[in-house]
Structure formats: C-alpha cells, structure tokens
Length: 117
Image (cartoon, one colour):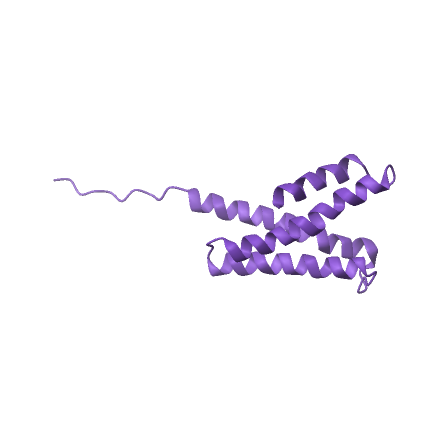
C-alpha cells in the first residue's frame, strides 16, 4: 500500500494540478487514501514496540480524518491548502521516523570485551 502511495506521489508530481488536473487528482488520491490506510495496516499488523505501533496508527488515523475533512470541504480554519498538508505531511514524517527506527534496530551492538585467559 505504501508503494502504491509512493507511485501516486510521483504521478502527482509529474502532472501538477495546473496541467492535467485529472491525473494530478488520481495521483494525489493514492497516497492520501491508500498510503494513509497502509499506515493503519502496518501499525495493526507488524510486530512493533508499543510506542512505534501507537505512532503509526495515530499518524494514519490523523491523516485519514484530515482526508475526510478535506473531502467534505471542512478546512477547520486551515484553508484548503492547510488541511491538504495535514493529509499529506504526516505520512512523510512517519516515513522518516520509521526509517530512523529501522536503522537503529539494525545497528550492531558494541562488543563486550572478553577477559584474557
């Protein structure tokens, strides 16, 4: 799901809204809906620490709630562009944080010195 969302970001970037709005809209819908739903799937299905799980599910839920507000034209004082950023940016922030988390998991631990015999 995250891969499909990533492809959508590419499509939305290739076709800015002022060129071919249909392609831009389809491209933007993929990370907005599929990518953010993917965060919920990841948070609910992978074996993660409780902190990472809560962060993942929280980010997915926040983005999907913002998507509902955006789609219903309720911008809660942020304006159209502001609420659109609330739909999009949490996923990017999660991707960076999860990358750091995975890097930290993969670091080898310092070797414990063994006493000389």
